[in-house]
Image: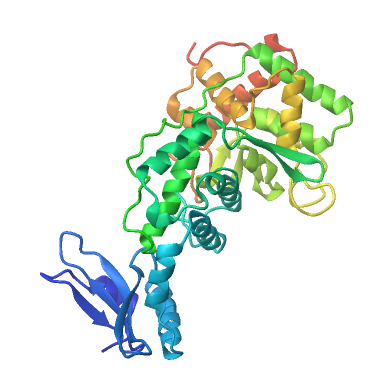
Length: 422
């Protein structure tokens, strides 16, 4: 028998019955190929326990883990067996006793190591992992943490959604010596928490802890898309709040970051972590190395570049931290503070992004153009190999940014509001 490799695994074809392909290099490590219609391939470790009883332990499905990852896991199992342990029995015992809190801890340990993949089949980003930790600590563990995973039923998930919706887990949480976070309920919060709970239970199924995901099929409210946009009066109020913050001595990173959010339609994280090396003024774009959609080339208007030209350059980041070499971290709280000062308590950085798209629509630009301005995956300039940005897109970004900048400066008459094609 040859060493079990990815090439051999990929070449294995389903037959009328399931069969094993054993590794000639690591005794007891093998692949089971199932017949049609599933045709799935699963790695196993085969050993005898201290009593001489033969045990066959599932390692994981091919595709979920690689051949070499399965080999390392099998080596750990077989090594434990040689020491007199019984890994399969220990797994079965733990499977019957593991609580939701313990399952969440296992899931997040895997996520922290980059073993949980996100939508782009890549390890979850640190910000997403921190959100996952928060949902566990604020909603899942308080309501379900003590329950045994194997005893969960769909009714438990339904009650979980209802309890989060009515605000049963709402609280004010201390985050820093002088900071706090308001944990709220509501249908949207409940839907996102339930969706994440479903992901954790899918992990439990893949790990062999339970046979089915009880969150599947449980009704929840669709996570509504945020459609709030600023009116031009609200743009003027927000611009006045930015100016007041500048006069009151707010850090320059605060006002510059907020203005860049309004003028570029970039996401909060994209501006907070923007590097000077990603700015291509000659090309009229930002060449963002890592965004929600992967690498992205974003058309940027002239007003944003004019603002950038006024900022000090002292490090890698456009908005540097005040005490170290990292990015400035105070923008989210500062933006909320300025929005409240403008009387806009329901306005978030995402509102500026949606408002930018809405202004572009008001000016008559098409959906594909707007998608490209926002950096959507289907936009025409996303991707890491684009070198030249369409001049039409750059002109569109400049026109929209100029309109928004004029309104924030209370100079709405400066930019004509004719539609494209008129």
